[in-house]
Image (cartoon, rainbow, N blue to C red; front, side, top):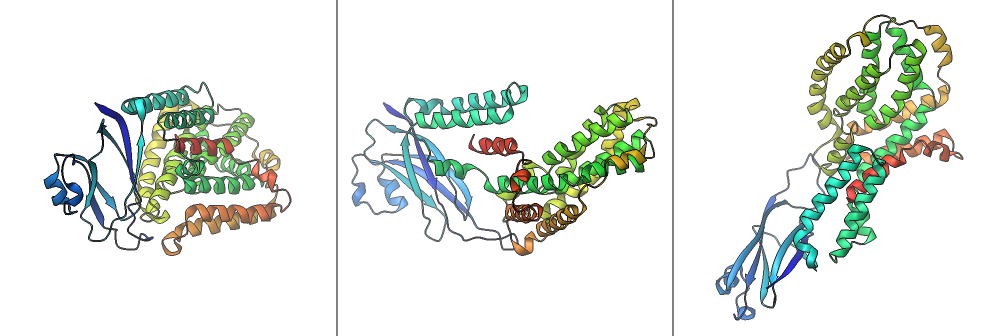
Length: 406
């Protein structure tokens, strides 16, 4: 005797303007959603107060209690209505002292309503299982997951518009990743990363242990202020080429760099995709400096014990000396474009300083990265920007975009 799976979306609980981390915290509101059975009662004539309606109701059902900030929030509720829902009244109560706007969207989920949670779990297991198995490229898997999710919503009569789907994507995260990828891609054309690898080889004095330590530190610093995905894509070919030239096994170096990239990327808001997502979602409360102050010390405390463990784990792989003609390496891998390197350094310096000044400027980190990328594209070549855009990891951007939809 029930109509299965009706979904109610309470959105736009919007009472406040834009605030920043330096302002007072927003008030927490407590919202309750009730379903009253008013069949046979004179409820249209009852005083329109919560207690008046509750006193006349045949039965009441609490659908949910929510604590929300003074900003837009959406909630999805699954309820079951009687076969004849006439006389069922939904009541929203709150402790707010000001008017609370509420938008309600009602959609029948049909026969799929009762199994939607199980279906979502199956899709999630399927998608992440394929990602971990690497049977299919992760970008294709994420796009398959997003497509299956949208198809399931369409079967529930809840097919979202294209505008809604695009709105699910975290534009701040995608914009920040794109901007930093452009900056790093253009900087890579100067040969500075290969030069840094050769410099680490020279400073190591022929010691594999010191070379690994220097390469890990370089990778960690770059990961913190660029982003660890792009850094690893740049450092990996440099490391492989360097190890091949000095005739040593690259595996201990690559694994150590990957671990240090993940650890040091955690130190800043732009160093790791999860940090980027958290930073954009909580941009009103967390700044670039907040991430660095709170996470930086922990990263530094972790770094040296971590390297000590890696040295013990790899054993002979990091012991002994290597035969390297540093002079020949320096001739083979010089800075190839010094004027462009100066431009890249200036733009990157301005971008990082702007991240630090976020608390004062309130500029979105994504806008900072995008503006830096545009400036560098103009400085690189006003007529051949397509060459720089080829270095952007579009598959990574599509992967995250599809995951946001999924």
